[in-house]
Length: 129
Image 1 (cartoon, one colour):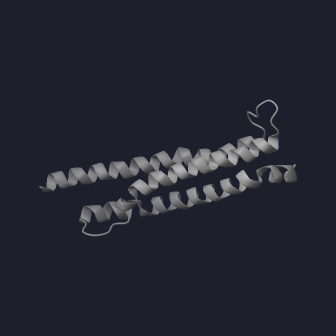
Image 2 (tube, rainbow, N blue to C red):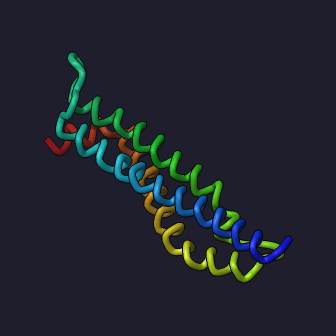
């Protein structure tokens, strides 16, 4: 394999990493916006209480957060290198390590908070109003 094809492969690899991280942004936004909207009674179905609607938003939070985690799992091998690697791979891994970690911990927080809301959201909603 020549240097040109190595660089092309690295560029494609970087595109995959960047795409996964960029897709995570709207998913993370949905993770935290959905419960805020549902807490305020946005789009509550007829016959559904606001508390139960808020509780259901916890499941949507978990789905969005797990989707982000799945996207991150697919690129984690490119960020945390093992075995033999080139200097190009190291540069790419270092460039995206911090954003990767930030997205990972935000998604984790969303999954945990979503689980709490999913389990106890009706109680939390009734307690605060």
